[in-house]
Image: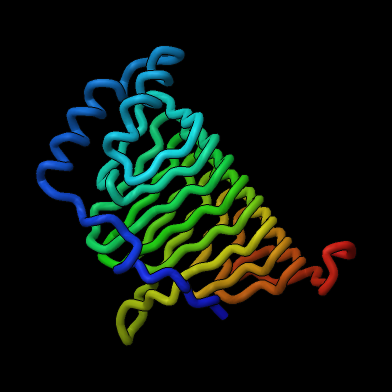
Length: 227
């Protein structure tokens, strides 16, 4: 079962993007976003705090990274964002939080498709190349997680009775293989491993190994030492 988000977005999220903030964002990106390293790294470290909601120390952003709704993005210390990553948080009342020592690899696409979307990436997690992540629901990735390339995490699902937005939680120290699909309403328990290509449509207990379509647990334990 999804752990309910205790953050009240209405109280903590920055104001929604305005026309002026979008103009500043575009000009800033066009000015320094394309410059290669090492000069580009330094210029973006100096310039991007002017458009982002919060930026920690030693930000490292390569060329080609795009921000839309940058005023709804918070970034911690020692974060690396590699080439061509894209962040679109323009939906009202939304927020993206990237913790300390997170690495966002090239081509990652993170977006809020409609209002009231919170995406929270915990400290020391790694998001692999071309991972796609989108609301409108709540997505929480714990600390020390590794999510391999081409994984999809969508916190919404179309059913006969309408659109669900239950949210997704990946707890601390999980490993997610390449090409995994994680569907709305799922919690992946702490220390679990999801095999490449799996489709996760229901909760995975802590310290489990799950594979297949749909994902089935092939090994589970209540103790991390025996997983």
